[in-house]
Amino acid sequence: MNILVTGGCGFIGSHVVRLLISKGIGVVNLDKLTYAGNPENVRDVGRHPKYRFIKGDICDAGVVRRAARGVDGILNLAAETHVDRSILDPGAFIRTDMIGTYVLLEEARLRRLKFFVQVSTDEVYGSVSSGKATEGSPLRPTNPYAASKLGADRLAHSYYATYGMRIIITRGSNTYGPFQFPEKLIPLTIIRALLGEPIPVYGDGRNVRDWLRAEDHAEAIWLAARRGRTGEAYNISGGSERENIWIVRKILSAAGAPEKLISYVKDREGHDRRYAMSGAKIRRELGWQPRRPDIADGIRQTVDWYRENRRWWEPVVRRNAAFRNYFDRQYGHRWGGGGRRRADGKQK
Ligand code: NAD
Ligand code: TYD
Image 1 (cartoon, rainbow, N blue to C red):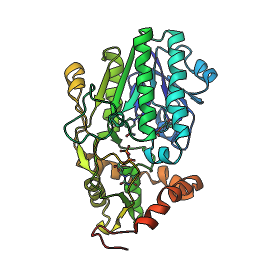
Image 2 (image 1 turned 90 degrees about the horizontal axis):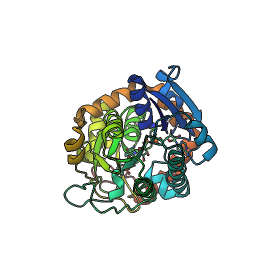
Image 3 (image 1 turned 45 degrees about the vertical axis):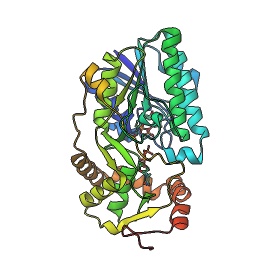
Image 4 (image 1 turned 180 degrees about the horizontal axis):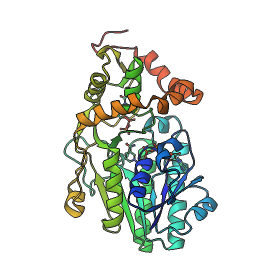
């Protein structure tokens, strides 16, 4: 079997590529190598005879046509993925997450591919004030990232309803682990803790996310591709809901860094308070639950990975002007505007 994985040089995509190669499956990895894509993430499989890399954009129908030649199915992970960036610049999200998905779906339709998995997100449900979102819950995304992912999620579904294609949609929760670009909460906090730099916590730090290990996420995507019911969406929940401040404190403790690095900053615009999903459907239908559910253990292991892999992240953080510019743009006004308060609430 040969599979087209898009976004295979990104965080979760690289775990998916590694998983498929370890199972003897042929992989074509189509990735544009945006700031978030890093060939180092798949270096261990780079020379494998069943692995092929194509640098290209999923919005480019010509490249997609070439990449899809001879494949059985598509796992679409390529996306712009960071909520804060979507607030600064929604255009790239509309383009890649929605139009790119359309281009891939068209290719799958014309080639009559055996399956297409749209990797979606729990953010399509929006903030869940109580209980847990099931696959039938209302879809109420609030930020441009979540809204563009919902567009892709429903467009994929329409290809099932309209053309009868084998479409599966997965909605994963917040994912963490090795190879995550250091802009999202966990990797950003880890590297700043290791560097002894202030850690920006939005608002009161009590927003809740449901955390899932990347390796578990990859396994669930592949299981859904093989055994999921056609046209269905599956929540992939890590089953570990935690307040952000809990996560930050665990990281500081694992990194041996002081709590005084915690700095409460101006909140994210439209910040969803809580994400929470039920994992009952995928457990019932496919027998899946996370194999690595212990978030405290997972954080310790992830901190260890970043500690041992400075050569992977230091060039991005220290010597990369684009990242520094992004960081200043994203956080400059936050430290300034809200004041750099410490964990005890005092102004710095
Ligand atoms: P990531 O940002 O780490 O990687 C995205 C990858 O896509 C990069 O390698 C990038 O170069 C590539 N890419 C971006 N635009 C492209 C384009 N136009 N053409 C080709 N390649 C392009 O993302 P991630 O965190 O690994 O997320 C992967 C998928 O999982 C995304 O669809 C995301 O929405 C979804 N997801 C992520 C999370 C999470 O917590 N990270 C949770 C649920 C779902
Ligand atoms: P993030 O990792 O960006 O994922 P998402 O927005 O997709 O959930 O953020 C996770 C939580 O952490 C979210 O509530 C926002 C918060 N957060 C901070 O407090 N500080 C930060 O610097 C970042 C990036 C996120």
